[in-house]
Length: 438
Length: 187
Image (cartoon, rainbow over all chains, first blue to last red; front, side, top):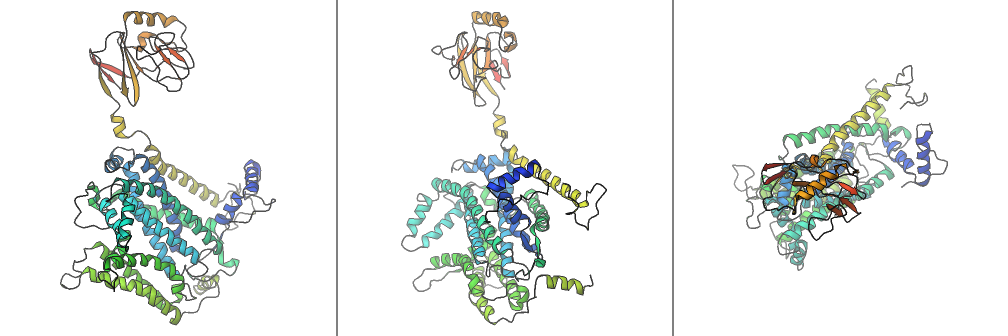
């Protein structure tokens, strides 16, 4: 990532060589790991105007570490077999030392991970972090999101409760919508003729593998980030040294503060409402002969589930079932195209008066989609109005989701009158101070 | 943690010894971080200790009514073999006589039994954890008639004491008690 440093380069010790300093120099000359850390974590120039929305990237990284650490310990006590999985999870809850705590941290950690990553993504949407030269960075982020969804889905299957089993059945059956080869693919995914022991065992294997793949893509994500550095709330490039501050100590301490606040929130859920985000039905052992009355995915997948269920009509020869699956996948894959759908040169919504409004409309649309995903399709949205059901709200909000990306973004990019951008990052920062008389 | 005068932020007042408020804050933050991390990691480490259901299995009861003098039986306790040896009067006599035989790990035979005719041992060689031979009449019992560990050649006597070979200590006597004449509770 960095060019090999010249032999004379001193390792970043505090001026005093000493024993430790010499050891650092010795290692650094052969493998410049200390120079690298100094370069990327200490002096790494960072825009000085980052606000708290920029905390969520490092938070996501820390949650990934928490998930892997707790997951490794859980795997030591978990048995991936349909006859033992449920009981082994209950044993973790009752008998293993701190097993309840570790499982609740892991279980709610999935929710926290998605919460933080969704905020991270919406931060990117608001401040235009996907625009040149950060398209690859954005793509790698979407890859991480997709990997997270796969990992979370397979992890949810492992306790082998009713929701585990029927969630696995419903999601794997999505692939049966593929023409001609769908059924063969589903049989292959299952390793049998239903979700059964082979399915559970491969899901466990992949659930253990994928987080490490995520770590790999996170490394690429950070690599891409560090080439051009962070975007910032003004969405303009850094022009001089005055626009930057070193990452350490300024952002390490800010990230740590954010971590403290976040951990209070996270641990409050772990200790006081550990099952608030889960489904009670998943504490009933899986029964392949009885489907629960109402199957819902975890909250973080609800908007996509809503899009899946919203397509209730065939188009030409394409069946509704297949269209729903296509729409659901398209809702994520469309993010890959965003840097070209929104070709406006102005990154930050602060200088895009119309987009700034539409961003919030889009956010509300996504929340509504989540609400639709949680409800039964034929429930009434408003108690008094009979012919407005959640399926129709889902169709409206799904249509708007794609309308936002495919129509609004290009139109705005072309026609929106943007506000003038500041000359530099320091200008508005120092300028505002001057106005305030400081 | 002491900064030289050049890299001390001029905005921070330095004490007489050159230490600044920032030094204190850095140390305090680091201490809090290390302490917090240690507390957070402890549940993960402790989860690898025996779980409650494992600990609950740590007692067994054994009926030894059918074990005749000269017979040995093996039972499983905490995943390990436990040797129960119904000793003959000659074996008891030999074991007691050897109390003064210059033992590597001196211990009187009467301290190793609750009733002289019943010898109870953890059947794990104290060298590197193999199971010594001698429970069956067909197996070698070593030079001292007790047990012989095939892994590295440790010889144990009629009291389960190490007499020859690399094992450092006598075969362990587990905690046990007689619930009645013929029922043992181990653990």
